[in-house]
Image (tube, rainbow, N blue to C red; front, side, top):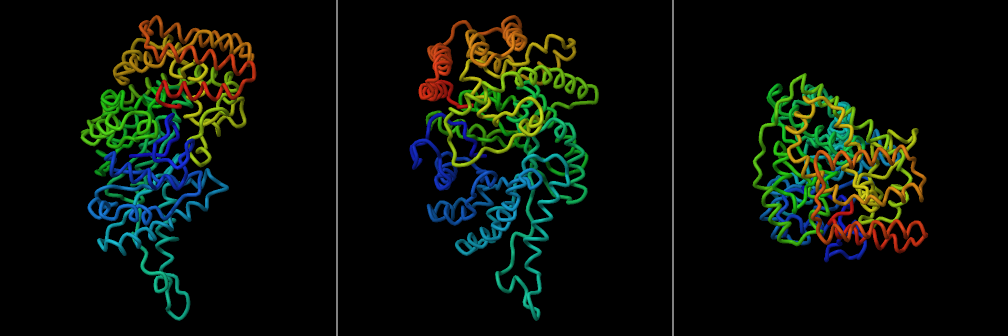
Length: 503
């Protein structure tokens, strides 16, 4: 699934703007994803921007023959990501606009190809925390979009007599679950939705980035494993087919799903059917690497998840709780440098970023933070890879928890090693000098990197790019200290090129 996450360092050649991918460019982007990269699904994001609801018409205008042979809605897919009206208060009516465009796109497609195929029939609902929010969307579509055709305008002249029959008659909803409480409650949420709607199948989207930002990389990975196991159980209990989606990015913190790590990523998340292909995956590697990696994903056969019983669930919750407590303490104290550096990160999309759960949960507390991509990019830019933060908490875990963690998170050591090599010890002095970060927090970070050194190891033979990265983080901090902000911007960009992702 191609997504519009703005994590790419390099800009694609076809972009009309050298710095950002505009809303209009996203039509070209979707076309390239289908035809040139072999991606089978495109997420069309209506959250946080002026969505182009004429996407189907514009795609067909680009290459009618291609779309006649590769039918959207049957061979390849376009899936809306809609705003959650319970979260996006100011823009909740975008949901109405977006859902009403589904029949319009059906009419456009069938006027051209006359094949009875609905090009758009599924929508992704972010921040799903209970089954009622899911019902709100599907019932709104059924009663307010489809149901509107039955309104008697006057003298038995109905709405559909004016605008035509409304198809498709129903949509499938894909819940995007992003917080630990909802992931731990996934069985109840999905089963209650199934009880009311009785769908033949469900696709369930598990976030990997926001949980990492909220709780740390290791808890986020465990949550994805837990969710996969519970989705298997839901399928067995209900008889409904369940097809999990994992939303991961190129950085280890956000899932390590990129061409350089594709085989390990498919093994790590082998329970999942669909994988998000974010912008850094597509634009920061050469075309052949990208195409080869996408072929591997398309050939991927999902495996049955590791069964998680009640005792194992308790252990997972214990690890998540212990780790996230330490992680959040550190993050709250370094929120200012994160926010300051975020201001100078490249902006790659013509939109505001999605609202993050960490931002909500901390809005009345000590920290207000950017979204996950900016969060990761800021920390890497100052030489503090977020993957290591909180990891010393593992030393307090009993042996049984350690064994389970290594069993569930197969490539944990590889992910930690890949990120820890970017740690710059000198950055701690700059954090104190520039932002007055407390000695207590700096000592916690030192304990984290010491834990990595003692228990996992940091590569001593680092590449030229890694050595260059560590030098640039120091130069960036020196530039920030001396208020050379244009230089800060330049170093941030160079650093992201070396990593092949912004965040």
